[in-house]
Image (cartoon, rainbow, N blue to C red; front, side, top):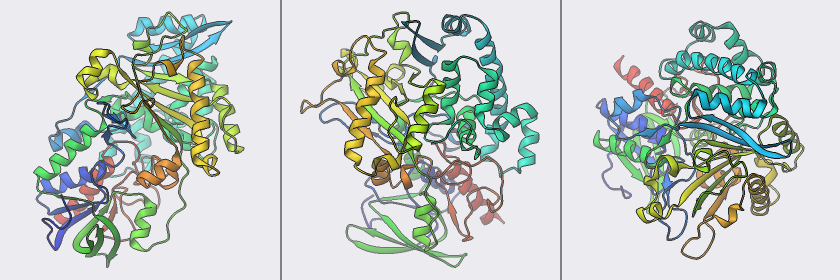
Length: 523
């Protein structure tokens, strides 16, 4: 809505930020009969979960920032009556490699028989496949037991341990660096690397980091939906936030875009939120304030001391192709290889080397990354003409590229890293990727790259960290509160990714903040 239209002077809840978590909270509270105002500084809602047309004159709506769905509970979709669908991917991953002078690789998916054969083709036997099955049977059991707790009040550590009811799994995932489990269970370097990658998405860590931040990242990646499967949002990520905005509006919430909250004054029972628009400043009162922004931004708004940002460490690349490239490994169809997660330079030792180089302040000489093609599973994001001509999207996510590496010259380092990353992909292709890239209306290649510094500037992600901070364990610790959304101000809650059990596209912090408000109001 435009500035100054339809505002009241006071609301039961004001939500700062119209990203997906803020919209979830708004929809829950409005459906419960509360008056709700969402203040969003940008001209649109959605935050990092948006679909846009990044290439001039090209009818392709890409999930520009976040791009896959795993952690969104079906409960939220059902509760809010969302018009939102996902599609599963038959192929989980493909990882190319050269062995004994010939191109080969590991295709996971397409049925048990094909996966077993792929492991045997790569490793020469049954051992690695059997170890893979045992390991992911274990994480699957943990997922079934832990995922439902994300939308419940925070369990204690002991309560969650009892819920997991598997001492080996608890030790592997919650107590020892994940590298120990990977090395104990798998012998093949490539298989080890494929397993480890889920511990490193947006997380700059070694496999044996004693902080276990890699374990927390791994845990969230394997528990999603109670299965660990990563699904494709039909219509792109913006379809989710559009559905959430519709649900919130239909329930009576007021969504005010172009309204930037600049200050929160609170005495713990009532609050005043000052906001800025193109026409000047205004203020609105609220009983509760839910902040769908980073812990750093929360502190700025309340006048508290901001915490130290957690450093982001990823490269996000969006591409549009005229056709998928052919692979050097002729035994694998590119349409299968790119429909799952296509791992590049993600062998176990390659990941360790890349981390060590980046930790020493250098760009990895062999930058690891992973790619998938949204349009193979969901062509609706492309215009009919592009679909008919065989166009496809590619989304690349690079690892082990901490924000510090871009400080000296973000633009130059971005280009250098993009060039070397694509060279790693080209090493496994039978034709250069550049020959397959589409061009926009101005004749420029359809490719864009975002560094952590770009994300910090565009989305206000502190340090460019996609999780707003280092991921937390999904259990209560000192000061976390009942739902993991509480702050030192009684009526100010953190409903963004920086909440306990935040990170990723989940809606969980938005749900939990709404539950905390409704519990208090019902007392």
